[in-house]
Image (tube, rainbow, N blue to C red; front, side):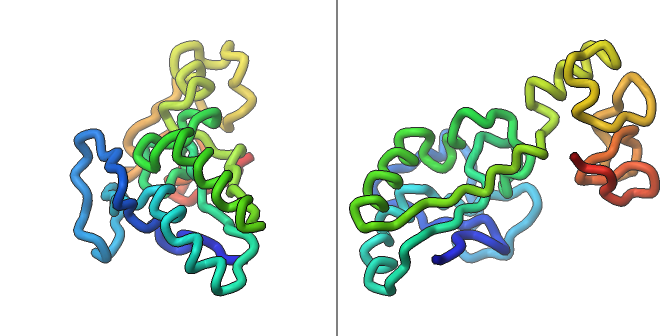
Length: 172
């Protein structure tokens, strides 16, 4: 088994398709940053499958691939779609088909205990406060939620960026 994009979420760039949709990519191989994208693509993995097969790889573990506002995709906004920057659902279907032809399995890092600020459940909490049906999905220290200002420690709920002392706490 090989884990794809463990330390830095980078896949190979695909030669046959560009799904950049106006995103400006960093130079390939540049040091990753919090907000920049390298431009890797699931079809780039498909192009490398023969090489991986020759190595004897029988499974690929992918970091999160769900639609997200972050390059590492641990802030998903939609668990039902593959991020368009990675090629979307069609590219994932192709990856599955081609991997299975080679006897390889695909394992996804399903980060279902993470959501981004753009996720429908979090938006519901922003709009409805403690009456949101999703209020118990998050640990709010007060209402209304202050969703921005993580760099300054101004959020009032437990999150990846932190709350109460600036450290990540109490994630579900």
